[in-house]
Image (cartoon, rainbow, N blue to C red; front, side, top):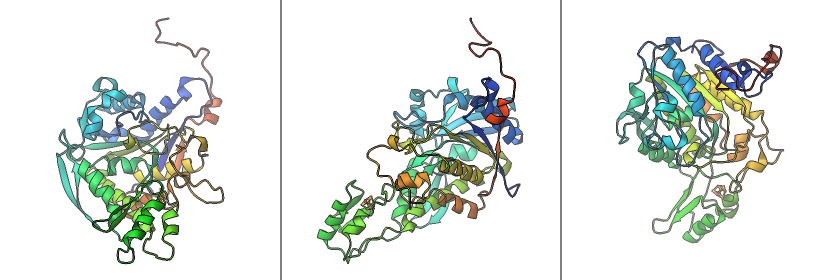
Length: 399
Ligand code: SF4
């Protein structure tokens, strides 16, 4: 990394002036300028990796901002294109993303059959190889454009998850990366009778424990488990089940490994990260449905350092109050104020500390958890600026 404390630019949704120059769109433009796209060369193919949503999920990065980012790339002579998994690309029009609205083509990350990939050796527990999206691999520059939200498996989704999951083919994403949580033992089959296994299964009211009687195999869905501890209570006296931090952390570790591999395919000065902290839902865009926002909107962060932008994102959300009445009733959050937890841990359980992936990422040399937050067009600053006389239907106008 270029500096010990990389800069993370922050534009708050809060404003101090009724002028458009103080609003979020102007802040996004300023952040883009500060991040400095000039290292993108003329005719560079610039992949804007974002999640275009699934089905009825509408809380993704607004096309309004996507278009501004696309225009900024075009302005310096780059050839931008948006990329995501083929399903999301195929029906992106339902959520307002088209070539016409975004201003550039939208291309599936691993081709229309999800098979245009580059294999790399992950060699991490049960994951030997992963198939990286070939379209992303072929690009010259990367803009990792993320909608920040909670995530049931790792606490939160931002820039790392956007490429670590979204940058790989479907089978790598859903089977291998999500399957890594099962690679460390947590249940002792010999200690557990079939009757006891059924008791454990029944103890999990949400159905996150399954038991295959024929194979005498019990499985905990760590990605969904909210660590209520009911199964462990039911296991008292037998002791055949453990919920270890390692099982929960494996997913975060492989996310860092996958994201690092994608970053390595770009020059360091051609990687840009923008996190949108708007419409922060408790669960990820992959669910394909709308959820209530569980935090007030915060703003936008941009940096050339993926670890720094993610750390700043979590730090800002950590200062926010979780809007408890908006948490979906099927979730079982940890709301005891005595517990010292990040709000995303309150939503998804203490063992889903969202900072874990950032520690792994830093250890891999992907960036720095220390950063310098630079607020652009802060409300206190714009309050002192002259306000426009008129704010409604200004030029250009048909009125
Ligand atoms: S700790 Fe997890 S697996 Fe066990 S009962 Fe609670 S939610 Fe289910």
